[in-house]
Image 1: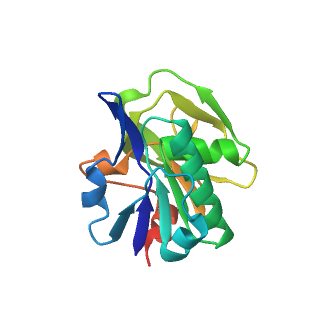
Image 2 (image 1 turned 30 degrees about the horizontal axis):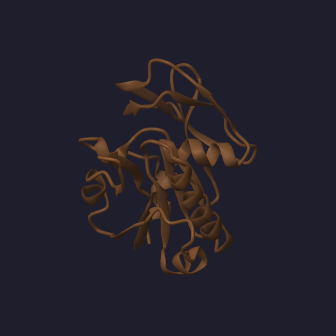
Image 3 (image 1 turned 120 degrees about the vertical axis):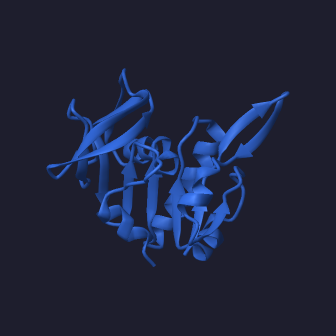
Length: 182
């Protein structure tokens, strides 16, 4: 499967660099990965044609990153191809699809359980936002102890707020995993 991965923008010595967390190479070792350049002027329809799936990765938000991610996600959705948001990506998709994202405390650099249809799963947490309410068509797959949505799916669009690429034993809901099984 050809998977496009969005990249965060890192600033170093007054220069901007696109960066991808190395854990993705291990997590998606059986797939072909395409880091997506943060260039809003590229041909997103052509790029969407070449990719099988687009993962909007975690990390800091920036205007150029957000614009790139929204444009490619839109092109992928138009072609009915999977788009999966992880942490930052999940909050971005939730927001643009009409869900409610709020500031939360106590979810930065910890591990906690999520409830996946009665099965408690340990996940990591590296964020200061939460999904108070997913968008109207989303099916909630996992919640935290406070009732915040931690994973959702809507057809071929899905989001999780933890980082599977940072987990010793990565886990994502089966419904989302199936989007990656091509």
